[in-house]
Length: 129
Image: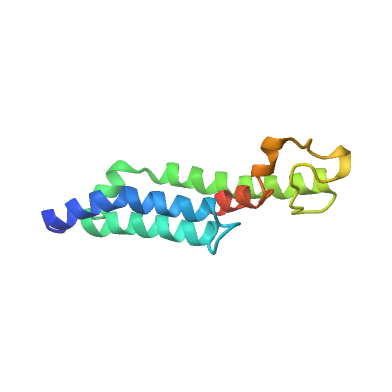
C-alpha cells in the first residue's frame, strides 16, 4: 500500500478520470476517440486505484462476478446493436440515423432526432467502452 498522499490523490483524481473516459466514449463519433480509447482511460483510472490501495483492498470492494456481468453486457449490447442494423437497415452493422429510409419504414424523423447525428455509433462505443 502506498503513502497517504498517494492514496488521497488517487481518490481525488479517480472520479475525474472516469468522467473523462466516459466523455471520450460518448464523443467518439465526433472527435478522435471512441469506445476502446475511453475504456482504456477508465481502466487506467482503475489501475491507479490498484496501485495506490493494493489489489486486496480492491478485491474486497469489487467482486469478480460483477465485472464479468459488465463485460458480458458490453458484448451482448454490441451484438444487439449490430443485429438491429440487420433488422432495420437490411445490413449487419448498418448505421441507421433517424429520418433515413430503411427496411420496415425506418425511424421517424423529428426536430429532436437531429441531435443524434452518430446513429448507432455512440451505442457501439458505449458497448465497447
